[in-house]
Length: 375
Image (cartoon, rainbow, N blue to C red; front, side, top):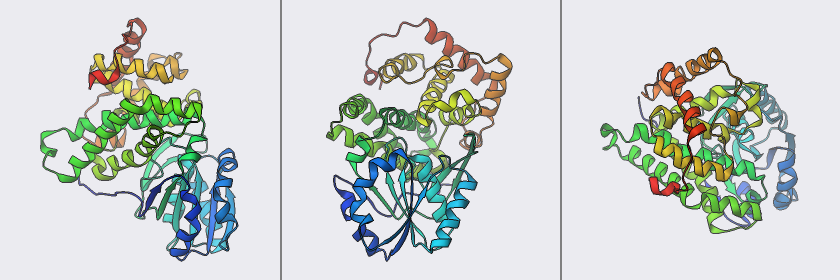
């Protein structure tokens, strides 16, 4: 594998009141016309934070996002950009909306992307790639972009208004950065590559921040308390986790956990679960595959405190037959990212790991040992 570094947005700022200066930031970039792509419920929460921009002399067009990052939706947004002759596209919403906005900007020369996340649920606002889906929510993989995000602006108070389950999903997705990437980044041959060392350090930071502050941050969003712990976890979910893959490229992108997520999307029963929730289960499968049962037991305590899925039953998939499970694990084993990473995982061994995980968690009485004690 070659190493291509894609660090993240050209400019990033996180702070209370950061959106008050958004108009001046756009003017500094020569932007006079922009299209705002927004969600529905998220826009109701975000609109008041953007009053300075909405009341400015910058011409704005508003486009409602359809809910899925599909090629059709990207092309629809591209057509609106062309019709309005916009110089920028502003995304206000969650991860799939962010990915759609990035892709639309990629397709038109001279159009800059400005991202304002309303959720801390993944690193989509940071990464120069888009995870693509069908209209029915089935994951197709991801496409990498040559254009960086021009500006990523995070208002912590806006993230604090988000649904709690999205934040919990972000916590789980960020935890996966360590369990997935360290398998490759810890290899002896990678210990002299400066960028891979920084990527691994970022992954370690993800793990430590989630372990030390994740539960507190979830409690903070539940009580609507804007604390340093909440802000730190938000920035870790969005920015630090994005640096893992940005600096580590294919060496740090994914192994089993995300491959399991991607293939789970074929089952309609799983569509009620968020990206990070399915990744959480994928982490469990990976640890079972690696026979790290002590870590499974300790993670199970952490999962239960946040109500994250750890078995097929938790994902409404207890009805899967052995043939269906065999087809599922075969698709996981053939995942392009898994193969490219050099992580060897035969379908039979993945299927065995899933069965072993179900048996283990079904009979194991998990102790109250803290997750941090295993690290």
